[in-house]
Amino acid sequence: MIAQDFAGSLEEAARAEAWAVEQSARLALPEAARFALSLCVEELFVNAVTHGRAARVRLALDADTLEFRDDGAAFDPTQAPAKRLNGAGDFEIGGFGTGLLQKFARRLDYRRADGWNVVRLAFV
Amino acid sequence: MNMHVTEGHGVTWVQLDGRFDIEGAQAVDLRFSTLAGSAKALGVDLGGVSFLASMGVRTLMLTAKTMLRRGARLAVCGADENVEKVLRMTGFDEIVTLYPDREAAAAALTG
Image 1 (cartoon, rainbow over the protein chains, first blue to last red):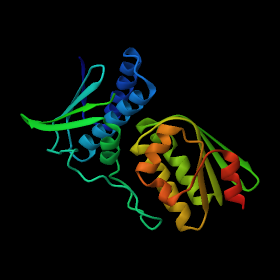
Image 2: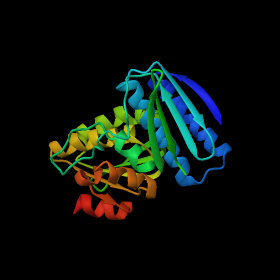
Image 3: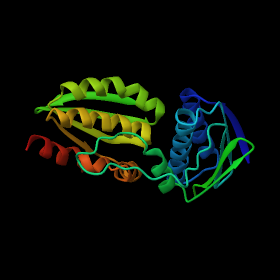
């Protein structure tokens, strides 16, 4: 398992995504898995920074599982409602990340441990 | 991400190429905002987009919100399988019709 630490900012979220892309190539993941991994990293990171005010994030990756840790406010993405627009009159934009995460991850587990949110997800 | 804007037959076309991720969205947000306030009919061709997540969807939704509220037309075309999956899962297709290619989008925008 390869791990990498990041600070809690949107610039770091972009760097984490680039790291995920690089690791996807190294692991020779199929296209669908690459897409799912990038998407899950972006959605988790953006949530952790913008809603959880996380200062630290750690990503750990092996061939089929991502472990995402952040020290932000407790948030369980497996229990959050999946938001989507509902008809032409619905223009409440935002909150779509969790639904995308739930759909693109093959398996999604959450626990809170020692002040960290720990999300484990399978992307293959 | 690259954003190439052209005009043709009353339609403003935006060709996007690359990853519509956090950095991609930041790179095109301002130009989309300007087009959303000025274009009469806008066609967004996602044929060159290899990745889309919620920050990119947000850019497209803000564009749609501005355009539809002022009675302008917007169509999106060329999304690959994964990109289309993201657009449908967020409900973007409830407010903007997705077309397979430019030809179909052009027919809807000028018809």
